[in-house]
Image (cartoon, rainbow, N blue to C red; front, side, top):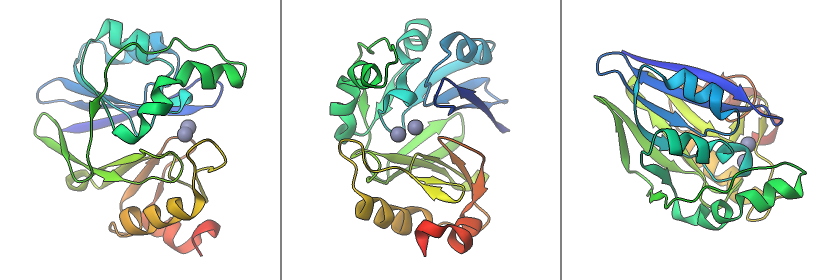
Length: 207
Ligand SMILES: [Zn+2]
Ligand SMILES: [Zn+2]
């Protein structure tokens, strides 16, 4: 069985997700944004196999250095977000926040690539616009998508940050997310979960 735990962390209330496979006791972390000790404590007892990053904004990678020191596992990121990744600490400082710059080489992701956790599979969906290398992770057998900061309940990601592009974001959402089944759970990078059907019907940004 696959279970998902959301840990809402840091001043920007970012949702870090811990996926655990109860059969193999393996785990994956998505977007360890802050509060490293809390995240590490949540992982304890499982064998962490990877970190999947939806994108490299500082609120999604803030705990990465400490987490990676504790669990030196591969960190997956789309190459188009390398630039943001390299300047994470600098971007945090711009917002008056302190972040330990991750000193590691991310493993590149491509659109359509499959990531695994035990027997479970996630498909990488390239969804740029909020960030140039933004990825969503879709687990079709489990009916949910980790949507990062592309799509939120009643909203979409901001595009006024470097590398943001509103038209590109809307196109990404329409192409990769709204084409998923209505009942697909959307687990966003901030705020409460929603479904593809709800957002297709009611999201004011997608009319
Ligand atoms: Zn972001
Ligand atoms: Zn964010």
